[in-house]
Length: 373
Ligand code: ADP
Image (cartoon, rainbow, N blue to C red; front, side):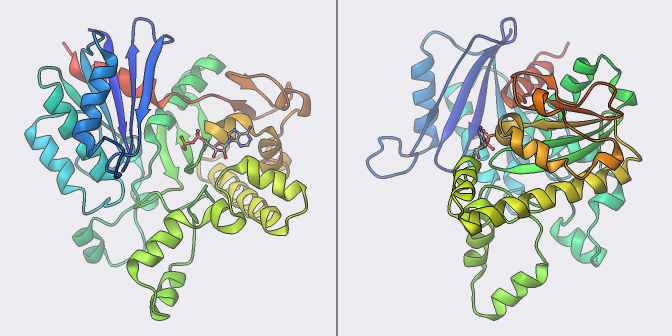
């Protein structure tokens, strides 16, 4: 019972990977795209799920792990899916209208084609269920907050769980004694302050819009900006589209890929240069803030597409943090792959690159829940 199908459903795509936990390095996977688009031959997620099964042929999974973005306050750990849980995830669509519907569609489609294996939902928010109240609460009327489920939830939890454990392993120290700042920098990006293996603060909030500058999202913004735009006549959907899909690197510099923005900046494009400076400014701000929150840092950890690959950005993100003992060694930072240390020997704070593996984390959590006892 070790073969897990991991499903990650987007609004028009279904990513899948089969991981045999007995041999996690040999994986088969792929993506069904253009779901629901005319002429794609994949009218809906149900058709996409059938296509995934056809592709897998005889390699039938023992269990299915579903990546679900928002677990709200009800789902704070990986959960075996039955009709009641499915309804609970559906009830969260109000709270995460952009993010939960695809996951729910994926669950329904996969349960229909694989009714006899356990299905487990793994939530991006779950790792942050430990946020202390002072980090989870927005300073608004608590009655309004309670009525609408408004609090800070945080995301990228599967990645933070995986990377914090992998960091403890790399350092050969118990996770209980580590104070970490993990920077998950991909197309979506967030930072997490982790103390004793537990999330203490994170940059994303009610939705994945808060915090760092991302590929297409603004990150932190004065909420007054939204009011101002609304008063100027922009609709809710227009503002949503502006902040979620036409901001960040893409909004400022025309591409959501940091590689494009970096080459444009190098070629002298001032808006690309500014986008990078805003992104770096935000990163340094949270590094300093989180060091203060957790009372010192044992390791700063970079992960995901940008964090693992853009050495120049890692170096620049920490360049003024020497006073906290945070520094990178130029030569170490410039080479290597896999889990590695990029701080100088004897440095008071370890600076590491630890590749994330959200699919493996989902597979492991799924197996734990599906085959407990
Ligand atoms: P996602 O959040 O979609 O899972 P990833 O973690 O794969 O994304 O990160 C994707 C992003 O990583 C790309 O948009 C790109 O900006 C960035 N990236 C990948 N490789 C490099 C690189 N060598 N230099 C700079 N940025 C990179």
